[in-house]
Image 1 (spheres, helix red, strand yellow):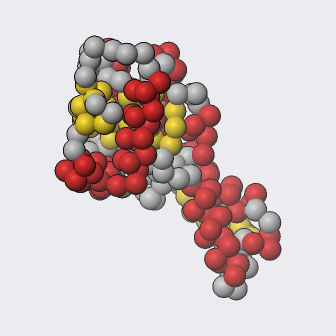
Image 2 (cartoon, rainbow, N blue to C red; image 1 turned 90 degrees about the vertical axis):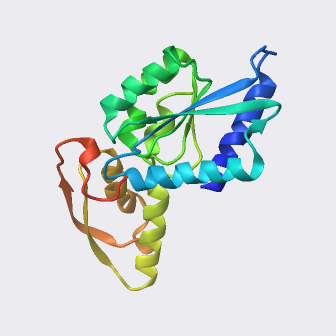
Length: 209
């Protein structure tokens, strides 16, 4: 998590260096994460990493003081959209960041593009996220990266066939299709796959992001 926030700080530095001189000496960052609910552990890890970095290195970058505004989505995409609107319109944040799971960020991509708001995805890992707006960057990973590594390990260890069971929305589909896109020599053959429907995208029963 320290590396993730370090990347965010680097983005702040580049952004303030490239922007015209402003009278304000504060950079506001709105953190949109699932601080409560079943994905709260991931949000807590990211938040602790941010707090640790700021404790060790301070809260000033390129002469600008960093102000964090935390918003809890409870892992609900409709909350993410409402909170992003509040942060942009009422709090006048310079940067949006966080995003524990995919539905949070996908719910606000239109807002991000309309407001031309620089947005840093610190966890949500569905591959298509960064294609949804030119203002979005990601400092974490994509699910295909994990799955390709797992597939290569399985093939190397004599596991020729596999069955997949995933949440039936974007992150799960990423996991399910990745082995099929890789060569059979480097990944097991997926003999069968089951998509699990959930009451809402945030109600995933597997550890999808």
